[in-house]
Every structure is written in structure tokens, then in C-alpha cells.
Image (cartoon, rainbow, N blue to C red; front, side, top):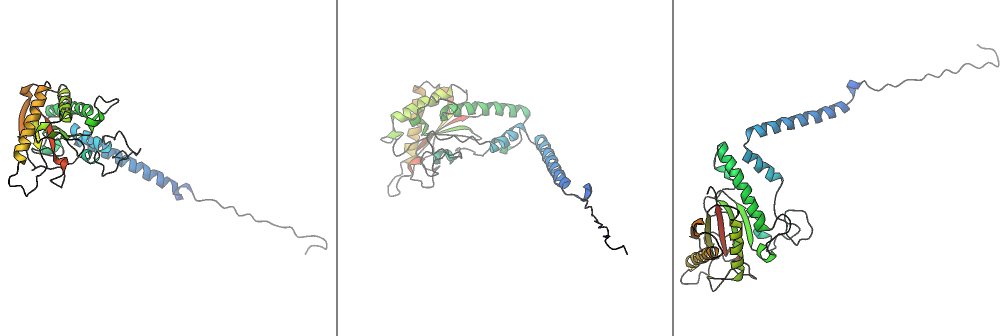
Length: 278
């Protein structure tokens, strides 16, 4: 014992806490997982580039960068409809309804393999078709096409070629008295001829009508669609198109509608096809 008046020394024991070693932590695992994921994506990309043709790669790229035309007047939306309602008259036709009349396939590549030379020719043809579409749809800066004409045009590319669909609405008809063309159709024919100067492909003209009421004793759809296709061919020739470029004039009556309601006026249309490989 210490003597009186002497205090025992105070001993403080400090315990040093040391974190786990580096190999016990989990941060490196997250970084490693990110690295492995990136490498897997890289090798998948390399495999995809090696296993596909140039045309297929272009199709994949187009899928991730859609080129749906934006409406000139819209609610400011950035989606595919440009802010318009899905039920708008000018929006529905541009949603890709319908298809080419002969041997339709969504993509030309689906028909089978092509040689390198054919792929190059197809690529050039696709580029030319895109130029024609841009002209007709008023894309790329100030358009030379009036708005009232743009409302009646839909374009799509198919196995057969570039299909240009000219349709009528309740407010603006293409024909009066069944086969007499309106000024709207005359203006559209001049626009088609102007676009035809960009390419040398042959053209096909197709006439389509909406269905007539079944109470009629005779169905005039075949005669009317044939007459309308012929009238439009004559309009093209009178607007300056060479007669040798029109390779086919076809009547489809009401057998190839673009609307489920066969009597819908939207089914009244003329289709012009810039044919492939010509």
C-alpha cells in the first residue's frame, strides 16, 4: 500500500481498432463486376459486327434511331407522334399501316442472302430512295412541298421498292364524279414527277378504293379503281414523265384496304411504286 496522501496512478488502456485488410472489403468487387460487364458487351459487339452484313447492321442502327417524321404543328412532345393524338387524321397514316401490294416483306434482307455486289447496289438504292422520301415528306430544312400536299402523302420502303401513297380525306378529295381528278391530285402528280427526276427506276401505278355499300346490285370498285389508276398515269405523263417509265398500271378495287373499316374514305388512294433494280 502506498502511504497516506499518495494516489494510485490512473492507467488508461486504449484499444486500437483496425479495419479489415483490403482483400476483405467489397468495393473492388463492384469495380470488377463493371469491368466484366463492359468486356462482355465489347465481345458481343465484336461478334455482332462480324456475324452480320452491312445491310443488317444498318437495319439495327435504324431501329435504335427511328426517323418518323415529326408533325409540323404539334403539342411539343418528343415522342414518335410529335405531340399529336394517336387518333389524329394526319397521324394515323404515318404510323406505317398497309404494305406494298406485291410480295411484301418488312425488310429486303429477309428474302435471303445477298452477294457483296448486290448489297452495295441495294445500299445505293436505299440512299436514293431516302432522298426521294425527304423531298416528298418535307424533311431537312425548308420544304418546297406545301402543307396541304404533305397531309396526303405517306411513304414506305418495301421489297418491291419505294411506295408513295396518295390518299384522300373527307375535307380534300382526289377525284370528283368517280374518275375526274381534282386540283389536289393534279398537284400531287406534278410532285411525283419532280421526285422521279432523282431516280431512273420504273414506276407502277395502283388504284385502290373504299368498299361500296353491299346493297348495290353491282360493285363498281374494280372499274373505278382501274379508271383512277389510268387517269393518274395520264396525269404523270402530261406533267412530263416519260411513258416508258410506267411499267404497270393495276386495279385493286377494295381488296387491299389500309383501314379495318373497308368503307373508310382513307382507303381511297393511289399508290405509286418506284420499283427496285431498274
